View 1 (cartoon, rainbow, N blue to C red):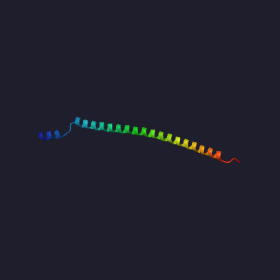
View 2 (tube, rainbow, N blue to C red; view 1 turned 120 degrees about the horizontal axis):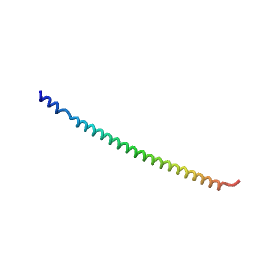
View 3 (cartoon, rainbow, N blue to C red; view 1 turned 30 degrees about the vertical axis):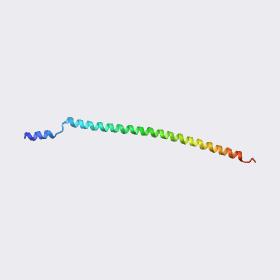
View 4 (cartoon, helix red, strand yellow; view 1 turned 30 degrees about the horizontal axis):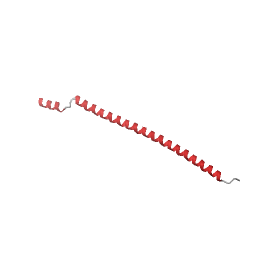
Length: 83
């Protein structure tokens, strides 16, 4: 009877070992989540910069097209015969 009690005691994992494993798992999940959150923040910042650059580019393009249209119309008006 005493040998069976020893075998049962040997097969049980001590409480501190289970706590350590649980703490290690929580630490791994926490660090992984933090890393993913930081990567998301970097992606959002990059997307914000890209959108600002795109808006600036489109604004410049619209201004250039407006100036081109103005130049074409002014040139056409000068060449048109006066009546």
